[in-house]
Image 1: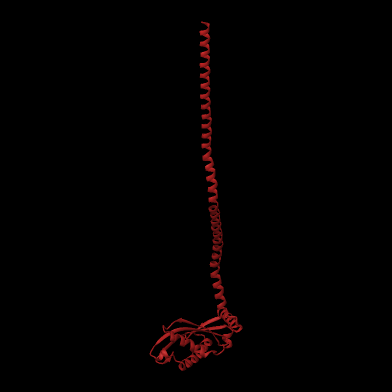
Image 2: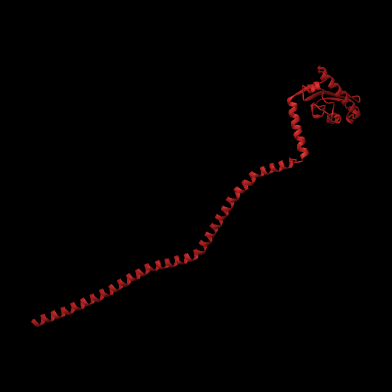
Length: 246
């Protein structure tokens, strides 16, 4: 009976050892598989990162020339913008200064530095001031004896010159009249001629002016007139009719 119990114990012990050994072996295999699986998962997770890093490096390498090119393009645009901004004010300045240059050129063209011309202009200015200062308007209707006498002498001379230089337009049958004022200084010199009312025929107006200029200088002012005025403004109606000047 004791022997049988001993055999049972031995058999049970052997079975227990076998069972534990089997379990241990199986568990060890599973552990290795789990570890391997973990390493595999870690490697799998690492691979994308490595690939990403590689791709980023490649992209950086590929993008570098494009970035440089883009930077150069931006620099070029910036330079062009600066050049354009600097040119625009210059153009504006030239456009603004152009009228001034034109005016200066026109002034240079119109100014005559000839001494004789300047002297004549100054004389005209002085004479015109004299006209405004002490002057008198006379005509055929003036009643003062001294002024009327001077008017008649001047008129006779003008008519004689007019008869010798009768305008061709009047000879062709044109009959018109005009009102003209002749300004004389105290020496009888013509200072100015003004057409108060035109005949409507430029040839007749010009002919009347020519006749007056041909007669200059006229008689100097007599002392009685010279004491009173510096200039006389002789106003007269000029008529060209029937080959006569009235």
